[in-house]
Amino acid sequence: MSAASLSRHPGYRSLFAPKALTLGLIMPLETYPDAPAPTMRGHMASAVAADAAGLSALWMRDVPFYDPGYGDAGQVFEPLTYLAAIASVTTSIALGTAGIVLPLREPKLLAKQVATVDQLSAGRMMLGLSSGDRPSEYPLFGIDFATRGERFRDAFDVYRTVIGSDFPHFASSRFGRGDGRLDLVPKPAFGPVPTIGIGRGQQSLEWVAANMHGFIAPSPSIDRLGDFASNWRDLVERAAGDTVFKPIGIAGYLDLVADRDQPLQQIRAGFRTGSKALAEFLGQARDAGINHAALNPKISRRPHAALMDDLVRDVLPHFPSLCPPAHALAA
Image (cartoon, rainbow, N blue to C red; front, side, top):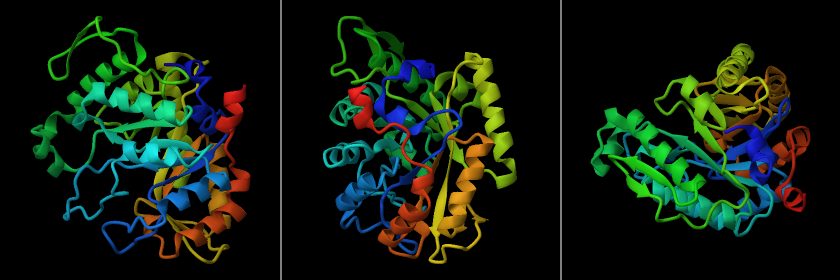
């Protein structure tokens, strides 16, 4: 699962390269700091505007059911369905999940969904995978929360085999068996759809480095970014060799304040900052070896349009998409 196998994938090419950093936003493109769910008004127009502005990626969380005790319904819509809708009105922006709760998914059907969205989006699909962090969801599916790490590996093996093989052979006590007589159609448009670990998924980081195409995790403190990236690179080298590049990214909430000059402050699970300091921080992260930042503006108290104005003015010019998919398709 080397980067070489992804050299044709437009979404991957637009997001990831050594010594570069791109910026994505976690959906929805709406701020709602005091509410459990967004209004979703004007969300398609906001996605079109983000695409036109040159934002690199939109990421969807997977929240199957709303838990009032947790207090966050994500972007409300089911992520893969929503990605397909956004793909129909955008042209260049990469579209990803952050991440699909794999232990709750039927992996053969997931393969069908992912291949379909990849086809419909002309190769912009990025599959982020997680194990979920809401124990209350698991009883609804008749699944023991304590088994989620084992189920993650089992589902991933079946998913990878079904989407990546012609007339696949596989056997799973949970997810059935294939004897090579049936095939999945469609296949992804440009070879493998990138799989990105969104957190460890109850796995060792060594397993993630060996099996995923990349890794995105909550941002450590600024002074630990270099060690965070270096440790990942060491694990990738041990698993795949010193010529293989697998990107590493950071994620967190973004409270982008009106004062563009306000210094960056790390807050619980994210950042409070002005747009100029955000650009400076992302430059530091890039120099430390970070390849992508996926930020969630949910907690900001300003209208989303005002945030985008600041990002377009002060941040995106320094961290553009690396190879817009339209160019990749013509390559």
